[in-house]
Structure formats: structure tokens, C-alpha cells
Length: 79
Image (cartoon, rainbow, N blue to C red; front, side, top):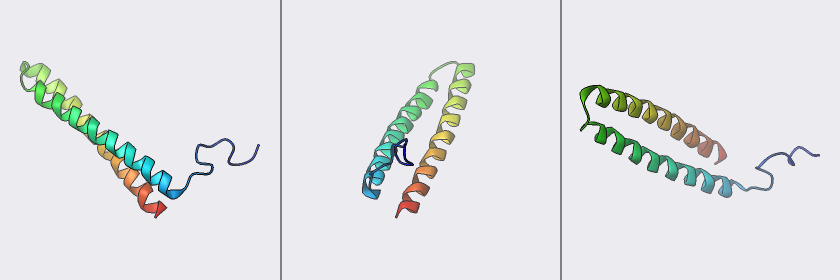
């Protein structure tokens, strides 16, 4: 077994990586829109439920931002 036989990157070009990163960023955007919908929908609930859903939504948004930043860093390093 060689160094590249146990990885998913063997033979992939930078443009392929860039495309894959772009696809991941598209999914992140979709998740962000869904998260915002949950946040807005929670507004119609009773106060305790609203606070819980909005706190959860805020935490999800923080994690999404973290992943977006890492993907941007990877894309920049590849160029």
C-alpha cells in the first residue's frame, strides 16, 4: 500500500477540489436558509419555546460560519 492509496485525494486536481468546496459551500448556504426559517418560525411560538429555538438557531449559525471560514481558507491555500 502506498501513501495515496488510503486517501480520497489521490489523483484529484486543484480545480476538482475547488469545485467540491463550492458544492459544500452551496449546501452550507441552503442549511443557513433553513436555519433562518426555523428562527423565524419560532417567533410564532410561546416565549419559552421561542427562546430555545432561537438559541439553537444561533448556535447552528455559529457552526455554519466556522465551516464557511475553514472552506475559504482551504480554497485560498490551494490557489
